[in-house]
Length: 259
Image (cartoon, rainbow, N blue to C red; front, side, top):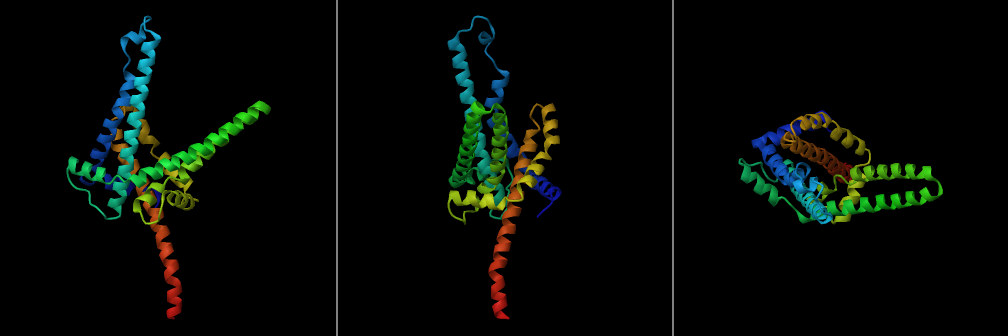
């Protein structure tokens, strides 16, 4: 396995190739603008004492639609970026020069099976977390302190499932192992012993996140592609190691027979 330093250095070089980070970062920022604008925009009449409940409802509904739509498009774009970066690392495509060429290749890299895999993993995570929260609420009626413990357990389970299913999209992208559930199950197995490593890797970007605050989010143009590239390299490293061990396991008996 590559070290965290090696992964991050490789990620830097990857996104700097033909200024790929500009394409990924700018599009991500543009997709986030609707939800960002909600934070800084509020009609004057809503801040006055004369606004009606209908005005407030209409404004809340509009902002919620903008936020959800923005989040959905960012999610779809991220699915495409993950697929594109893995294809680049697998030598299936090259990073072309030019903003439009790169954007076209990223959009072409969107695969419906990848989105379905991510969606299914999210649904499974939600169901398990929701069940635990309901159980915790039942405990609250009997022993109130157990409710707090139950909430912490629910959060922990959600955290574990997030990282257990994290590389399912990359397994799905390679498209050589079957259906959505298989990709999720395989991710859960391969992430055994690697969840904390990935969490620490992502946590190591906290310094960049602090700097990003002082740039009002503009630094995300570089940070987001950097993090996505690091995640992809991490996942590829795990998948390549698994496939290498699988190949060795098949070849070894043949070698013995030849002797």
